[in-house]
Amino acid sequence: MSMLITNIGELMTQDAEATVLRDAALVLEGERVSWIGPAARAPAADEAYDAGGRAGLPGWVDSHTHLVFAGDRTAEFEARMAGESYAAGGIAVTVDATRAAGDYDLTRLLLARVAEAAAGGTTYLETKTGYGLDVAQEARSARIAAGVVDEVTFLGAHLVPAGRDADEYTELVCGPMLDAVLPYVRWADVFCEEGAFTAEQSRRVLAACAAAGLGLRVHGNQLGPGAGVALAAEFGAASVDHVNHLSDDDVDALAGTWSADGATPGTVATCLPACDLSTRQPFPPARLLLDEGVQLALASNCNPGTSYTTSMGFCVATAVLQMGLTIHEAVRAATYGGAVALRRHTGDDVEGRRAVGSLAVGHRADLQLLNAPSATHLAYRPGMPLVHAVWKAGNRVR
Ligand code: NIG
Image (tube, rainbow, N blue to C red; front, side):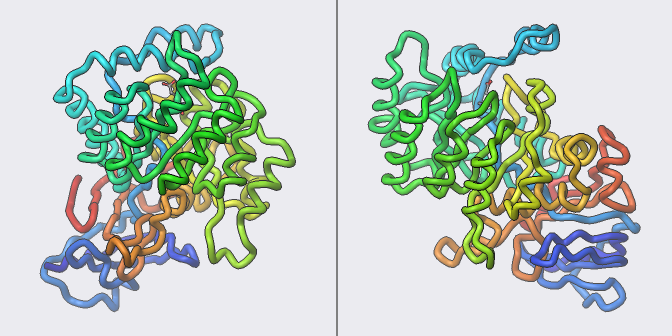
């Protein structure tokens, strides 16, 4: 079954050249894009959809979320707005609520968040464990997530549970906990930060998870300077996320992971602007990173502590309004950049998966249409519900 989507006023493809087409059309065939080009030259298809001059772009790739949780942290948020600073210790509140929830409720909550994200234009989603923090609970979170989202990350190293010795808990993460989650996860992450895991503990987690065959990501340099970025670069992590407090050496280390020809991707710097607003952290030096040749991603970081939103449109608007990115740079970071951070920007012959985060022939048919003539409206009209229609793998989901 093929579907021609025509009369697209502005189509941001986010292909290798980041081409922007005017008066464009594309054909979706099954789960893939089979044709893309000027509407005047579009081929016939089984069905046609008139986009009415609306802007089109790839669905968002949200490469950093923490969606497997129960409860919320409204009181902590209110205290923060009244002047308290964010501390990782709040994670323990969510751990208690999550452990107390049954599988049915936890799955229902996760599904509702994923549906909310899809309605906002997100078509590819990563989520993390990290609110279980014992072997059985982390395995449960990973299992539930694997049944719902596209990519699952093991974050047993999110916080040292109260009353536990940090080194002993790190050994648990690197041994029995890692073994228990392995069937469900593709990635591992560590919160390398004061109040969470030290550089040495983080190194042990990254080494053990890499040895088990997992791809690596790091929560780094969120609340202050630290070793997260350097470790991510050293271990060849696919991304380092937050990156609010960077030294010149950190920027050099990240830039050094990107080869001049760009053939092999380096460590993506994932910016989480909704979190930065909520925790009142300085925004990352996104312009400097881009100028140094570092690929950026933008992600929602949806979680109950620091960023309780799935809205990638809000993140794009904030990146433009507050971080100095152009709309093109911000949209690219929230689509192609997220895909690079998840190493899904190209097809995968081994697993037969299609590229996401960009629109080109053969790529997965993940498309959103905006109730606006151009993507600029995402920042020009911040907070407005601009998403008109969404296709995920060729299926209309909104
Ligand atoms: O990415 N930084 C660590 N993890 C989350 C916050 C988790 C929480 O506070 O519940 C984040 O901001």
